[in-house]
Every structure is written in structure tokens, then in C-alpha cells.
Image 1 (spheres, rainbow, N blue to C red):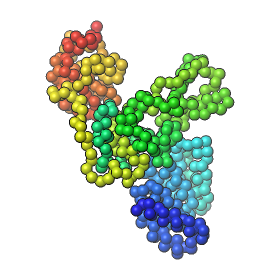
Image 2: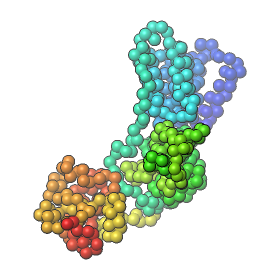
Image 3: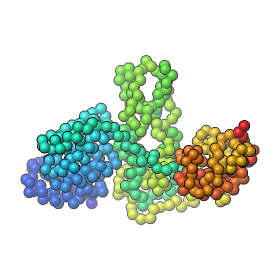
Image 4: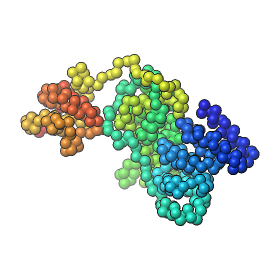
Length: 454
């Protein structure tokens, strides 16, 4: 098992510490024995194997470790591999591998840590440079002369099409049924895709701006966990409350105070960029009070599918253990409860008109009128945008109309009497929008209280 191999590697390490470095032949034999285990699906094992194989001057460890370093989903893994490889002697490297290694330091400015963090990375790089021959230094001059540049990793989920504005009730029954057959690696990937790692530590890795989530599976039930992911502002711990500072200039700074230094406050305004701090002087502050808004962004799950969200929840519930029961092979569990449909039997939205009106007026949703131009000219709603059904008939949305259809909010559509909206919904259903057809037509909406345009 992975645990047994981990224990054996630690015994081997202790033997070398006490008995000294093995001679070349013994080192080669030991590396040949443990090399096939590397890389492993277990990150704990990879850390020990990497350090041991570098110590033994293994001929294959550079390539294997560079591949792991480049695909690692957390900065802690990347840094560990970079630290280990710095000691590998020149004869075990190719120039291409050396270039890949030093290129990593060019982009490492986007990684986050404490005050000494950048110094540690600089020392790793300098240690690695010391192992280079003069010939290698000349050949690698271009990459060695590169200046570190910040390449903040793009949040993968943000570039995906909108799936839906998930609610707790959409997912609660599945989670309460007990998750089975989930995918650990995909859950871990979703933890990265939604940028959770930037603020939260989990299984010993990640940021420190937000609370450690390793034990969240033991502390939270299904509803509480989903509420924390979907509606983070519902309950805000006083440990992570944001402050609003009103300055004499009239400017407002909202965020968490992460450092107090004399008369200066350092405030983190964006949890997704915790290293970008705003410095304000105490004498600039006119008023300060606790903010009622969570620092955690909303909508982080809206670009994920149901399966991806359930894998993420299972990952959180597992505490980072890939052997947890929710990842056992087998059929995925589904809720014994009937899924709550967002549509009536006729295909119209179940949302009440009062809800629709409130969401549209607060800009939490948009309202589209899919009637034709002449019908629009005869009278239309003030809050609606015109997107004629005739222009969508081919299934391709013209660019000028696409700008009117947001992918991050519900899109309510209406026609004259509730018939054409069903055809429109059918056309747009695979376009990544949260389309909600209204049974109420134009006249019914006016009668309900939607304001007519002048």
C-alpha cells in the first residue's frame, strides 16, 4: 500500500542519515528498485520519492519531476519539487530540462507566501545555479537572465460557459443521499479551478487568508457545506469579517486587515489576489465598521456541472484522503428524492412573477422580449431587451444580440402569450445560458405590474 511504501522510504532515509551516503553502485541499485514507483498517484509518496531519487542521483528523476512540477495543482507541490531538483548534479540533466527548470522561476512571482517567501525561491534558484558548469551557464544565459514576471494563474472555471445559478436546493438531495463513486482527482481539480486554494488551506496546502478547510467534512453537514459554497454571506465568522474604511477623501476600502504596522494598515481587498494589499494610514480614516458582505466571492460554482460540484464536495468531505469511501469504485449515488424541476410540465419556469420582477429590477436577472419588431414597437416593457425569435431560428445567435444575453444570470424570456418562448428555449438550451421561459405574455406582465416603456 502507499502507507507501507511511505514507511519504507522513511526507514531508508533514516538509514542513509545514520550510515552515510551509499557508494555509486549501491545508490544505482536502490534507485533502480524504487524508481518504478515514481511518479505515484499519492502526492505524499511523490514527495519522498523525489527527495530520495535526487539524493541517489537517479538518471530519470529530472524528467519525471519536471513533468510533476509543471502539472502540479498547488504551489506547495511545485515548490517542493523545485527545492529537491536544485541539488541534482549536472550529469543528470539535459539542457532542455535545465531550461524548463529555470523557466519555472520566471513565472513563480505569481505564487503567494509570507514575507520570506520570495527569498526562499531566490535561494533555491541560486543553489541550482551553483551546480552549473561554465559551459552550461553560457548555454543557459538567456533563461538565466530572464526577470521573474507575475503570471497569476487564470481561474479555469471563469473561462467556461455559464451552467446555471446553482442553489442549495438544486444539490442538497444528492449530497444528503451520501456521495459514492466520486472522482478524487476531479474534485481536487475543481478546488483549483474555483480558486479555493488561493485563500484556503486544505490537506496542508493552499493559502492562509481564509479558514483551513481540511476538517470541514467533519464539522459541516450537507446543507451547511453547500450554503458556505453557494451563499458565503449567509453566515460570516467574526474571525473572517471584512471591515469598511471610509477615508477623508470619500473613498471606501473594504477588506480584511492583514497587518498593522504603526500608523499604517494593510488591507486585503480581493481574496483571489491576497498578495495585493492596500495600505492606508490611520489618520486617513474617517469612519470604520464591520462589512455585512462576505469576502468570499459568490457564483464560484456557476460554471461547473452537477458532477463537478459533487466531486468537489466529496473532495472537501474527504479531508484530502483519496481512499475515502466516497471515492470507492462503483455506481455513483443519486438522490432517492425526486429532483426539483425548474420547469412546469408545459416547459415554463416555476418562478413566480413576483420573484421574476424583483430579480429583474435588482439586476439579478434579465428579461428578454422575443416578439418581433412590429410587436415591440406597439408596446413593450421598460425592463426588457428585444431579441426577436426570427433572428434565432437558425440556432446561431447574432453577435449584436449575444451581447444582450448574459451568461452569469438567469435569463427570463416572454412573448405575447407564452407559446413562442418554448421554441426559443429549445433553440438556446445548449448555448450555456440559464433560460427561463415565462408563461405570462406581454399583457399579463403589464397587468401584474411590470412597467411599460413610454
